[in-house]
Image 1 (spheres, rainbow over the protein chains, first blue to last red):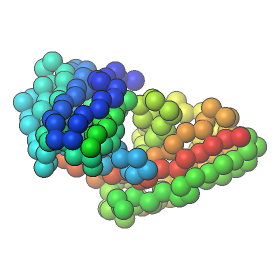
Image 2 (tube, each protein chain N blue to C red; image 1 turned 135 degrees about the vertical axis):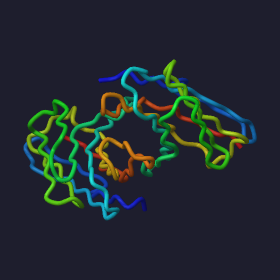
Image 3 (spheres, chains in turn orange, purple; image 1 turned 180 degrees about the vertical axis):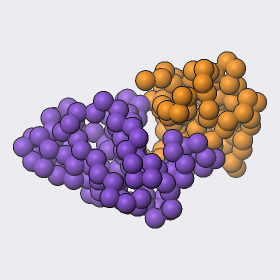
Amino acid sequence: ILNVEQSPQSLHVQEGDSTNFTCSFPSSNFYALHWYRWETAKSPEALFVMTLNGDEKKKGRISATLNTKEGYSYLYIKGSQPEDSATYLCASANDYKLSFGAGTTVTVRA
Amino acid sequence: ETGVTQTPRHLVMGMTNKKSLKCEQHLGHNAMYWYKQSAKKPLELMFVYSLEERVENNSVPSRFSPECPNSSHLFLHLHTLQPEDSALYLCASSQEPLGQGEWGYTFGSGTRLTVV
């Protein structure tokens, strides 16, 4: 079992503010890093899959960066809205196994 | 809807019961997965099927038995479960095994299982 760590475990952000949080993963035999958004009572939804060091991906107000040499990825939410409230999961593919972190739960206050 | 359908959404079963969870996808994906999520823990991989062949069995107790009759359907047969098996069971599929493609996994909504 690979150690994929996400921090913080939870955070509260005021509507309109921007925020970011971290996923750290083993850099050895790394293949890909996934980000998912999981809203309550729904299915986890894929946001990004990144493979190359220095990758940056963007989807609307959400973006992510990848550093495979030091083993971390950041997810950024710009101008948070209530609909951004969810648990954000990252997963690292190493040695052809995909291991998930425990998630960062984001609550956006109106 | 994500394209991956799980039934039932909720299940309560006694420790001596036998039940099955069903997962169905019509996305043309080649790989299907069962994951377990217990409270406050990361998703735990249970089983992986690629092209209907089981390629991963992550030290799961034999009281959980998967079945993949074709590329669109995946079952998890349950028998003589323990209360600690109560959890959310998620099914997922992907075009390529272990999410190597650019789209990642497509998840179902899960079955919330309670063992009494």
